[in-house]
Image (tube, rainbow, N blue to C red):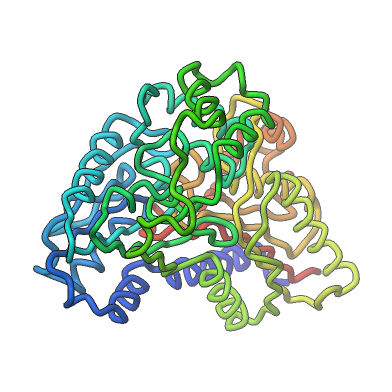
Length: 434
Protein backbone atom coordinates (compact mmCIF):
# COMPACT_ATOMS: atom_id res chain seq x y z
CA UNK A 1 0.00 0.00 0.00
CA UNK A 2 1.45 3.38 -0.93
CA UNK A 3 2.20 5.48 2.11
CA UNK A 4 0.87 8.92 2.88
CA UNK A 5 4.09 10.45 1.51
CA UNK A 6 3.22 9.26 -1.99
CA UNK A 7 -0.36 10.49 -1.60
CA UNK A 8 0.97 13.88 -0.53
CA UNK A 9 3.24 14.11 -3.57
CA UNK A 10 0.35 13.16 -5.83
CA UNK A 11 -2.00 15.69 -4.22
CA UNK A 12 0.52 18.52 -4.65
CA UNK A 13 1.11 17.53 -8.28
CA UNK A 14 -2.63 17.52 -9.00
CA UNK A 15 -3.07 20.89 -7.30
CA UNK A 16 -0.19 22.45 -9.25
CA UNK A 17 -1.82 21.31 -12.50
CA UNK A 18 -5.10 22.91 -11.41
CA UNK A 19 -3.40 26.23 -10.63
CA UNK A 20 -1.43 26.26 -13.87
CA UNK A 21 -4.59 25.75 -15.94
CA UNK A 22 -6.00 28.99 -14.53
CA UNK A 23 -2.86 31.02 -15.25
CA UNK A 24 -4.27 34.49 -16.00
CA UNK A 25 -1.42 35.57 -18.26
CA UNK A 26 -2.28 32.81 -20.70
CA UNK A 27 -6.04 33.27 -20.49
CA UNK A 28 -5.89 37.08 -20.82
CA UNK A 29 -3.58 36.86 -23.83
CA UNK A 30 -5.99 34.43 -25.49
CA UNK A 31 -8.94 36.74 -24.81
CA UNK A 32 -7.22 39.87 -26.14
CA UNK A 33 -6.19 38.08 -29.35
CA UNK A 34 -9.90 37.81 -30.21
CA UNK A 35 -10.58 41.54 -29.81
CA UNK A 36 -10.45 44.21 -32.53
CA UNK A 37 -8.50 46.69 -30.43
CA UNK A 38 -7.02 48.78 -33.24
CA UNK A 39 -10.24 50.79 -33.53
CA UNK A 40 -9.71 52.55 -30.19
CA UNK A 41 -8.02 55.93 -29.93
CA UNK A 42 -6.51 55.27 -26.49
CA UNK A 43 -6.53 52.26 -24.15
CA UNK A 44 -6.49 52.64 -20.38
CA UNK A 45 -6.03 49.60 -18.12
CA UNK A 46 -7.56 49.56 -14.65
CA UNK A 47 -8.50 46.83 -12.24
CA UNK A 48 -8.02 45.05 -8.95
CA UNK A 49 -7.59 41.64 -7.42
CA UNK A 50 -5.05 39.12 -6.22
CA UNK A 51 -4.37 37.97 -9.79
CA UNK A 52 -4.64 41.40 -11.39
CA UNK A 53 -0.86 41.90 -11.57
CA UNK A 54 -0.46 38.84 -13.78
CA UNK A 55 -3.45 39.96 -15.84
CA UNK A 56 -1.84 43.38 -16.29
CA UNK A 57 1.42 41.75 -17.41
CA UNK A 58 -0.51 39.92 -20.12
CA UNK A 59 -2.21 43.15 -21.18
CA UNK A 60 1.14 44.90 -21.52
CA UNK A 61 2.55 41.96 -23.47
CA UNK A 62 -0.40 42.03 -25.88
CA UNK A 63 -0.82 45.79 -26.25
CA UNK A 64 2.57 47.34 -25.47
CA UNK A 65 2.68 51.08 -26.17
CA UNK A 66 -1.00 51.14 -27.11
CA UNK A 67 -1.72 51.28 -23.37
CA UNK A 68 -1.97 55.00 -22.61
CA UNK A 69 -1.82 54.46 -18.86
CA UNK A 70 -3.50 52.63 -16.06
CA UNK A 71 -3.76 51.69 -12.40
CA UNK A 72 -4.18 48.31 -10.71
CA UNK A 73 -4.83 47.66 -7.01
CA UNK A 74 -3.40 44.34 -5.83
CA UNK A 75 -2.87 42.60 -2.51
CA UNK A 76 0.28 43.12 -0.45
CA UNK A 77 3.03 40.81 -1.66
CA UNK A 78 1.52 40.34 -5.13
CA UNK A 79 3.65 42.87 -7.05
CA UNK A 80 4.98 42.14 -10.54
CA UNK A 81 7.12 44.20 -12.96
CA UNK A 82 5.04 46.49 -15.21
CA UNK A 83 6.05 49.27 -17.61
CA UNK A 84 2.94 51.27 -18.50
CA UNK A 85 0.44 50.37 -15.77
CA UNK A 86 0.87 51.48 -12.15
CA UNK A 87 0.63 48.58 -9.70
CA UNK A 88 -0.48 49.61 -6.22
CA UNK A 89 -0.55 47.41 -3.10
CA UNK A 90 -3.44 47.50 -0.63
CA UNK A 91 -4.97 45.41 2.14
CA UNK A 92 -7.12 42.29 1.73
CA UNK A 93 -9.60 41.00 2.96
CA UNK A 94 -10.32 44.12 5.03
CA UNK A 95 -9.85 47.30 2.93
CA UNK A 96 -7.48 50.09 3.94
CA UNK A 97 -6.63 53.70 3.05
CA UNK A 98 -4.22 52.59 0.31
CA UNK A 99 -7.09 50.78 -1.37
CA UNK A 100 -9.20 53.94 -1.22
CA UNK A 101 -6.39 55.98 -2.79
CA UNK A 102 -6.07 53.46 -5.61
CA UNK A 103 -9.82 53.22 -6.14
CA UNK A 104 -9.97 57.03 -6.48
CA UNK A 105 -7.21 56.89 -9.11
CA UNK A 106 -9.09 54.17 -11.00
CA UNK A 107 -12.33 56.14 -10.86
CA UNK A 108 -10.47 59.20 -12.14
CA UNK A 109 -8.98 57.28 -15.08
CA UNK A 110 -12.41 55.92 -16.02
CA UNK A 111 -13.98 59.37 -15.82
CA UNK A 112 -11.16 60.85 -17.93
CA UNK A 113 -11.64 58.35 -20.78
CA UNK A 114 -13.61 59.77 -23.69
CA UNK A 115 -15.43 58.75 -26.82
CA UNK A 116 -13.30 56.42 -28.93
CA UNK A 117 -11.29 55.25 -25.91
CA UNK A 118 -11.29 51.82 -24.27
CA UNK A 119 -11.16 51.18 -20.55
CA UNK A 120 -9.73 47.68 -20.15
CA UNK A 121 -10.91 46.49 -16.74
CA UNK A 122 -8.96 43.56 -15.25
CA UNK A 123 -10.78 41.96 -12.32
CA UNK A 124 -9.95 38.91 -10.24
CA UNK A 125 -10.84 37.56 -6.83
CA UNK A 126 -10.11 40.02 -4.05
CA UNK A 127 -11.23 43.02 -6.09
CA UNK A 128 -14.15 43.69 -3.78
CA UNK A 129 -11.83 44.43 -0.86
CA UNK A 130 -9.18 46.06 -3.05
CA UNK A 131 -11.55 48.62 -4.63
CA UNK A 132 -12.89 50.43 -1.55
CA UNK A 133 -14.50 53.74 -2.42
CA UNK A 134 -17.23 54.25 0.18
CA UNK A 135 -20.32 56.26 -0.67
CA UNK A 136 -20.45 59.36 1.50
CA UNK A 137 -21.04 59.77 4.38
CA UNK A 138 -19.75 56.24 5.11
CA UNK A 139 -16.04 56.29 6.03
CA UNK A 140 -13.40 53.68 5.30
CA UNK A 141 -13.32 52.66 8.96
CA UNK A 142 -17.09 52.11 8.97
CA UNK A 143 -16.90 50.03 5.80
CA UNK A 144 -14.01 48.05 7.31
CA UNK A 145 -16.08 47.25 10.38
CA UNK A 146 -19.06 46.22 8.24
CA UNK A 147 -16.79 43.90 6.20
CA UNK A 148 -15.32 42.35 9.36
CA UNK A 149 -18.76 41.62 10.75
CA UNK A 150 -19.88 39.98 7.49
CA UNK A 151 -16.73 37.85 7.27
CA UNK A 152 -17.02 36.70 10.88
CA UNK A 153 -20.68 35.68 10.72
CA UNK A 154 -20.20 33.19 7.86
CA UNK A 155 -21.95 35.21 5.13
CA UNK A 156 -21.40 33.95 1.58
CA UNK A 157 -19.46 35.96 -0.99
CA UNK A 158 -22.75 36.72 -2.79
CA UNK A 159 -24.19 38.15 0.41
CA UNK A 160 -21.07 40.12 1.34
CA UNK A 161 -20.84 41.64 -2.12
CA UNK A 162 -24.52 42.64 -2.15
CA UNK A 163 -23.77 44.83 0.87
CA UNK A 164 -20.40 46.08 -0.35
CA UNK A 165 -21.80 47.13 -3.73
CA UNK A 166 -24.42 49.30 -2.08
CA UNK A 167 -21.87 51.02 0.15
CA UNK A 168 -19.56 51.72 -2.81
CA UNK A 169 -19.15 54.53 -5.34
CA UNK A 170 -17.34 52.28 -7.85
CA UNK A 171 -18.78 48.75 -7.60
CA UNK A 172 -22.08 47.33 -8.81
CA UNK A 173 -21.72 48.76 -12.33
CA UNK A 174 -20.79 52.24 -11.16
CA UNK A 175 -17.35 52.08 -12.81
CA UNK A 176 -19.04 51.54 -16.20
CA UNK A 177 -21.22 54.56 -15.49
CA UNK A 178 -18.14 56.66 -14.69
CA UNK A 179 -16.46 55.60 -17.96
CA UNK A 180 -19.20 56.84 -20.27
CA UNK A 181 -18.98 57.53 -23.21
CA UNK A 182 -15.85 55.36 -23.51
CA UNK A 183 -16.06 51.65 -24.28
CA UNK A 184 -15.38 49.20 -21.43
CA UNK A 185 -14.02 45.66 -21.79
CA UNK A 186 -13.91 43.83 -18.47
CA UNK A 187 -11.87 40.60 -18.34
CA UNK A 188 -12.85 38.57 -15.29
CA UNK A 189 -11.01 35.78 -13.51
CA UNK A 190 -13.88 34.29 -11.53
CA UNK A 191 -13.55 33.32 -7.88
CA UNK A 192 -17.30 33.06 -7.37
CA UNK A 193 -19.52 29.98 -7.50
CA UNK A 194 -21.54 29.98 -10.73
CA UNK A 195 -19.51 32.87 -12.24
CA UNK A 196 -22.19 35.61 -11.90
CA UNK A 197 -20.82 38.75 -13.57
CA UNK A 198 -22.19 41.13 -10.96
CA UNK A 199 -20.65 39.23 -8.04
CA UNK A 200 -17.09 38.72 -9.36
CA UNK A 201 -15.18 41.56 -7.74
CA UNK A 202 -18.57 43.09 -6.89
CA UNK A 203 -19.15 43.74 -10.62
CA UNK A 204 -17.64 47.21 -11.17
CA UNK A 205 -18.52 47.05 -14.89
CA UNK A 206 -21.49 44.67 -14.76
CA UNK A 207 -25.24 45.32 -14.43
CA UNK A 208 -26.14 44.79 -10.79
CA UNK A 209 -28.90 42.29 -10.09
CA UNK A 210 -28.84 42.95 -6.34
CA UNK A 211 -30.69 45.81 -4.68
CA UNK A 212 -30.65 47.84 -1.50
CA UNK A 213 -33.45 45.55 -0.33
CA UNK A 214 -31.23 42.49 -0.89
CA UNK A 215 -28.33 44.12 0.93
CA UNK A 216 -30.51 44.98 3.92
CA UNK A 217 -31.91 41.43 3.94
CA UNK A 218 -28.34 40.15 4.45
CA UNK A 219 -27.90 42.48 7.42
CA UNK A 220 -31.15 41.19 8.93
CA UNK A 221 -30.36 37.54 8.20
CA UNK A 222 -27.22 37.70 10.35
CA UNK A 223 -28.76 40.03 12.96
CA UNK A 224 -26.28 42.84 12.28
CA UNK A 225 -28.79 45.73 12.34
CA UNK A 226 -27.45 47.10 15.63
CA UNK A 227 -23.86 46.00 15.07
CA UNK A 228 -22.90 47.68 11.81
CA UNK A 229 -21.81 51.34 12.13
CA UNK A 230 -24.78 53.77 12.18
CA UNK A 231 -23.75 55.64 8.96
CA UNK A 232 -23.66 52.35 7.02
CA UNK A 233 -27.02 51.38 8.50
CA UNK A 234 -28.57 54.73 7.58
CA UNK A 235 -27.18 54.61 4.03
CA UNK A 236 -28.65 51.17 3.41
CA UNK A 237 -31.98 52.21 4.89
CA UNK A 238 -32.02 55.40 2.79
CA UNK A 239 -31.44 53.28 -0.30
CA UNK A 240 -34.18 50.92 0.80
CA UNK A 241 -36.53 53.91 1.05
CA UNK A 242 -35.55 55.17 -2.43
CA UNK A 243 -33.68 58.25 -1.19
CA UNK A 244 -30.40 57.07 -2.83
CA UNK A 245 -30.05 56.05 -6.47
CA UNK A 246 -29.78 52.32 -7.09
CA UNK A 247 -26.79 50.70 -8.75
CA UNK A 248 -27.21 50.50 -12.57
CA UNK A 249 -29.32 47.54 -13.64
CA UNK A 250 -29.52 45.43 -16.84
CA UNK A 251 -30.60 47.63 -19.73
CA UNK A 252 -29.06 50.80 -18.30
CA UNK A 253 -27.59 53.05 -21.01
CA UNK A 254 -24.15 52.93 -19.37
CA UNK A 255 -23.77 49.30 -20.49
CA UNK A 256 -24.39 50.02 -24.18
CA UNK A 257 -20.63 50.00 -24.87
CA UNK A 258 -19.62 47.60 -22.10
CA UNK A 259 -18.77 43.90 -22.26
CA UNK A 260 -17.80 41.48 -19.49
CA UNK A 261 -15.81 38.38 -20.48
CA UNK A 262 -14.88 35.52 -18.12
CA UNK A 263 -11.31 34.40 -18.91
CA UNK A 264 -10.86 31.82 -16.15
CA UNK A 265 -12.87 29.93 -13.57
CA UNK A 266 -12.85 27.07 -11.08
CA UNK A 267 -14.05 24.70 -13.80
CA UNK A 268 -10.79 25.15 -15.71
CA UNK A 269 -8.81 24.25 -12.59
CA UNK A 270 -10.94 21.25 -11.67
CA UNK A 271 -10.85 19.87 -15.21
CA UNK A 272 -7.04 20.08 -15.16
CA UNK A 273 -6.95 18.39 -11.76
CA UNK A 274 -9.02 15.52 -13.15
CA UNK A 275 -6.66 15.10 -16.11
CA UNK A 276 -3.59 15.04 -13.87
CA UNK A 277 -5.21 12.58 -11.46
CA UNK A 278 -5.90 10.23 -14.38
CA UNK A 279 -2.26 10.51 -15.49
CA UNK A 280 -1.19 9.45 -12.00
CA UNK A 281 -3.38 6.36 -12.09
CA UNK A 282 -6.49 7.53 -10.24
CA UNK A 283 -10.11 7.40 -11.32
CA UNK A 284 -11.14 11.07 -11.14
CA UNK A 285 -14.55 11.67 -9.57
CA UNK A 286 -15.59 15.32 -9.91
CA UNK A 287 -18.38 16.14 -7.46
CA UNK A 288 -19.06 19.79 -8.33
CA UNK A 289 -17.41 23.15 -8.92
CA UNK A 290 -20.23 24.98 -7.15
CA UNK A 291 -19.95 23.68 -3.59
CA UNK A 292 -20.78 26.16 -0.84
CA UNK A 293 -21.70 25.75 2.81
CA UNK A 294 -20.07 25.38 6.22
CA UNK A 295 -16.54 24.07 5.77
CA UNK A 296 -16.61 21.37 8.43
CA UNK A 297 -19.91 19.99 7.05
CA UNK A 298 -18.43 19.79 3.54
CA UNK A 299 -15.38 18.03 4.97
CA UNK A 300 -17.62 15.46 6.66
CA UNK A 301 -19.38 14.78 3.35
CA UNK A 302 -16.08 14.24 1.53
CA UNK A 303 -14.83 11.95 4.28
CA UNK A 304 -18.05 9.92 4.11
CA UNK A 305 -17.53 9.39 0.37
CA UNK A 306 -13.96 8.24 1.03
CA UNK A 307 -15.11 5.76 3.66
CA UNK A 308 -17.75 4.39 1.29
CA UNK A 309 -15.16 3.92 -1.46
CA UNK A 310 -12.84 2.03 0.92
CA UNK A 311 -15.65 -0.12 2.32
CA UNK A 312 -17.68 -0.95 -0.80
CA UNK A 313 -15.98 0.43 -3.91
CA UNK A 314 -18.90 2.80 -4.46
CA UNK A 315 -19.30 5.08 -6.35
CA UNK A 316 -15.94 4.02 -7.82
CA UNK A 317 -13.26 1.45 -7.02
CA UNK A 318 -9.90 2.66 -5.68
CA UNK A 319 -7.63 4.24 -6.59
CA UNK A 320 -9.95 7.25 -6.75
CA UNK A 321 -9.35 10.99 -6.69
CA UNK A 322 -12.47 12.78 -5.48
CA UNK A 323 -12.35 16.41 -6.65
CA UNK A 324 -14.52 19.38 -5.81
CA UNK A 325 -14.36 23.13 -6.26
CA UNK A 326 -16.19 26.19 -5.07
CA UNK A 327 -15.79 28.18 -1.89
CA UNK A 328 -16.99 27.21 1.57
CA UNK A 329 -17.44 29.44 4.61
CA UNK A 330 -16.33 29.31 8.23
CA UNK A 331 -18.47 30.56 11.09
CA UNK A 332 -15.95 31.77 13.67
CA UNK A 333 -16.53 30.24 17.08
CA UNK A 334 -13.06 30.55 18.56
CA UNK A 335 -10.10 32.91 18.59
CA UNK A 336 -7.66 30.72 16.68
CA UNK A 337 -5.82 31.19 13.40
CA UNK A 338 -6.56 29.46 10.13
CA UNK A 339 -8.65 29.52 6.98
CA UNK A 340 -11.44 27.57 5.33
CA UNK A 341 -9.06 25.16 3.57
CA UNK A 342 -7.07 24.40 6.70
CA UNK A 343 -10.31 23.94 8.62
CA UNK A 344 -11.54 21.54 5.91
CA UNK A 345 -8.40 19.42 6.36
CA UNK A 346 -8.75 19.47 10.16
CA UNK A 347 -12.41 18.44 10.10
CA UNK A 348 -11.60 15.76 7.50
CA UNK A 349 -8.77 14.43 9.67
CA UNK A 350 -11.22 13.85 12.52
CA UNK A 351 -13.70 12.11 10.22
CA UNK A 352 -10.96 9.95 8.64
CA UNK A 353 -9.28 8.90 11.92
CA UNK A 354 -7.66 5.49 11.55
CA UNK A 355 -8.66 5.02 7.89
CA UNK A 356 -5.63 3.84 5.88
CA UNK A 357 -4.72 4.85 2.35
CA UNK A 358 -6.68 8.12 2.28
CA UNK A 359 -5.53 11.72 2.05
CA UNK A 360 -7.65 14.88 2.29
CA UNK A 361 -6.25 18.00 0.62
CA UNK A 362 -7.72 21.49 0.34
CA UNK A 363 -6.09 24.70 -0.88
CA UNK A 364 -6.90 28.09 -2.35
CA UNK A 365 -5.72 28.54 -5.92
CA UNK A 366 -4.45 32.03 -5.02
CA UNK A 367 -1.99 30.60 -2.51
CA UNK A 368 -3.64 32.34 0.44
CA UNK A 369 -6.08 30.77 2.89
CA UNK A 370 -7.78 33.29 5.12
CA UNK A 371 -5.46 35.68 7.00
CA UNK A 372 -2.50 33.25 6.79
CA UNK A 373 0.50 32.62 4.54
CA UNK A 374 -0.64 29.06 3.79
CA UNK A 375 -2.70 28.00 0.78
CA UNK A 376 -4.32 25.19 2.77
CA UNK A 377 -3.45 21.88 4.40
CA UNK A 378 -3.59 18.10 4.02
CA UNK A 379 -4.52 15.32 6.40
CA UNK A 380 -4.93 11.55 6.48
CA UNK A 381 -5.98 8.67 8.68
CA UNK A 382 -2.83 8.98 10.85
CA UNK A 383 -3.11 12.75 11.43
CA UNK A 384 -4.91 12.54 14.78
CA UNK A 385 -2.46 9.96 16.13
CA UNK A 386 0.51 12.08 15.07
CA UNK A 387 -1.11 15.15 16.63
CA UNK A 388 -1.77 13.33 19.90
CA UNK A 389 1.88 12.23 20.02
CA UNK A 390 2.81 15.91 19.69
CA UNK A 391 0.46 16.86 22.53
CA UNK A 392 -2.26 18.37 20.36
CA UNK A 393 -6.03 17.82 20.46
CA UNK A 394 -7.57 18.04 16.97
CA UNK A 395 -11.12 18.49 18.24
CA UNK A 396 -10.11 21.32 20.52
CA UNK A 397 -8.25 22.99 17.65
CA UNK A 398 -11.40 22.72 15.51
CA UNK A 399 -13.54 24.23 18.28
CA UNK A 400 -11.14 27.18 18.43
CA UNK A 401 -10.82 27.57 14.63
CA UNK A 402 -7.10 27.06 15.27
CA UNK A 403 -6.07 24.93 12.29
CA UNK A 404 -2.93 26.83 11.25
CA UNK A 405 -0.78 26.09 14.35
CA UNK A 406 -2.08 22.51 14.32
CA UNK A 407 -0.87 21.76 10.78
CA UNK A 408 2.22 23.94 11.14
CA UNK A 409 3.52 21.69 13.94
CA UNK A 410 2.76 18.58 11.88
CA UNK A 411 4.43 19.98 8.76
CA UNK A 412 1.19 19.54 6.79
CA UNK A 413 0.51 23.09 5.65
CA UNK A 414 0.39 23.69 1.89
CA UNK A 415 2.72 26.62 1.23
CA UNK A 416 2.82 27.99 -2.33
CA UNK A 417 3.18 31.74 -1.96
CA UNK A 418 1.17 33.97 -4.31
CA UNK A 419 0.27 31.91 -7.39
CA UNK A 420 -0.79 34.77 -9.68
CA UNK A 421 -4.29 33.35 -10.11
CA UNK A 422 -7.47 33.12 -8.06
CA UNK A 423 -10.29 30.77 -9.03
CA UNK A 424 -11.55 29.68 -5.60
CA UNK A 425 -10.53 26.41 -3.94
CA UNK A 426 -9.64 22.90 -5.05
CA UNK A 427 -10.37 20.02 -2.69
CA UNK A 428 -9.03 16.50 -3.21
CA UNK A 429 -9.66 13.20 -1.50
CA UNK A 430 -7.15 10.60 -2.67
CA UNK A 431 -8.39 7.09 -1.86
CA UNK A 432 -6.28 3.96 -2.31
CA UNK A 433 -7.60 2.03 0.64
CA UNK A 434 -5.95 -0.94 2.29
